[in-house]
Amino acid sequence: MPVKIGIVDSGIDGETFAVAAATGFAPDGAGGVREVPATPDRVGHGSAVAAIIQSLAPAVRFVDAQVFPVRRGADPALAAAGIRWCLRQGVRIVNLSFGALDDRHELRTACAEAARQGVLVIAAHPARGPAVFPAAYPEVLAVSGDARCEGAAWSVLERGRLYGTSPRAADGRTPGGASFAAARLAGIAARCFAASSELSPAAVRAWLDGHAAHSGRERRSPAPALA
Image (cartoon, rainbow, N blue to C red):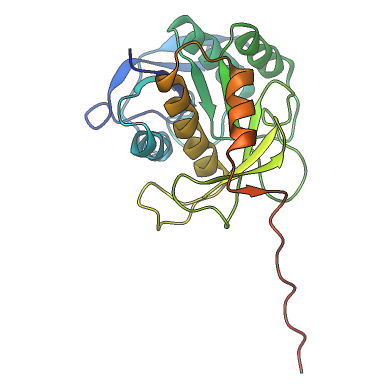
């Protein structure tokens, strides 16, 4: 059975990718969230994320939770609703290629709920700067861009917690960042689940720890001194 991956993002191009289910989420005007029909991915970010995942795991089926249809930037309440909806669709992985500085209760509890259900949650973590959420939550597998990694290679930056992959788009050339790196690791994890449907998220983390191309953080050479 194909692995289902939930993408909580700007939407997914349903004509290009195998989308098993799609819906959108929007503020209800009273401090809550309402479910709305998904619309075409005008931002393009979610479709770029899907392209990276599909390049590594061609048989996956996507579950599209559209939470920022107009411009990049996920509201935590909408993202939390998207995560919970993905869980109801039976996903094995939820990809969250975004991050925010504020720790919000609704997002934290949604990620914890996913972990309790045995779903692997993967989120973007910037290579530099302060921690961001949801990547900073202990249940979440955090991913940064790592220039040492090419193709499907990855690095272990903190065992069981923080990994690195190429930050480039699916074509391997277009620059990206942590959001694309997270998608790349989601594709690698999908291949693990496809090979053994009984694997737990903990087993996938252990496998990633044991098969990484690099261990430890990327070391950048200092800039040469001016003469």
